[in-house]
Length: 238
Image 1 (tube, rainbow, N blue to C red):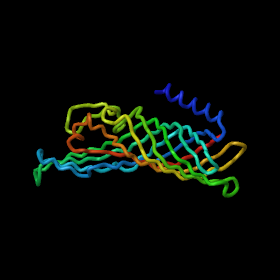
Image 2 (image 1 turned 90 degrees about the vertical axis):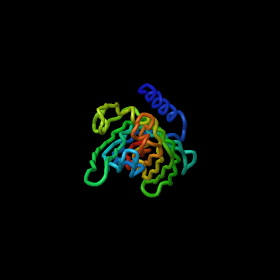
Image 3 (image 1 turned 120 degrees about the vertical axis):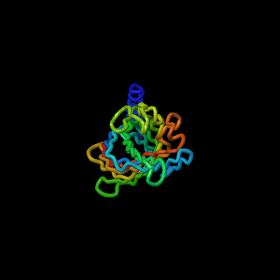
Image 4 (image 1 turned 45 degrees about the vertical axis):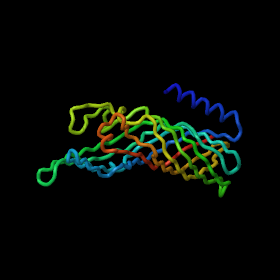
């Protein structure tokens, strides 16, 4: 995977230098991640058990990457690149068995930290120079993400709730992930071909993070989790 990433980066650099209309850059993206879970409540009538799910709040995350922009015209073009993302928030689940005074409840917090290699596919719309070398842009599209590592509760392996079984966290997370992406920002022409970039991005997960093929409890409850994040994008292009 590391060799493939290196080949892609070298290819991006070669193409950007060989063709007019291309610009290449680097960016750093501190972010806040949060999760959407479904269903919020599941009743297992056969076992007299109720599951209540909720997101695990905001988690500080980050991303770094290579940007490649290709402007077809003065005001529109395409944006892609190669990003390394630390994403994921996690979920909480309360498992109540029985009813009334005899009911027992177990609560579990699963904080997720998932590493992805991401390739975005974005349409870029950009104004001309508005004032003093500043222009503004918006990007809209989707991404393809591949998981390269993960931790749950800070560990690479965890024990399941109410079970002696210990599992590898990567076995319970889908390798492939996709998101819808929307960005707004500004670019400033500084010196020569150097451009400074400042933007904000919202990424909305559209594929389930949880791997129901290996997670028996998720198969039963139909649990699904989607990762979102909002990031501040700081970058420089050439």
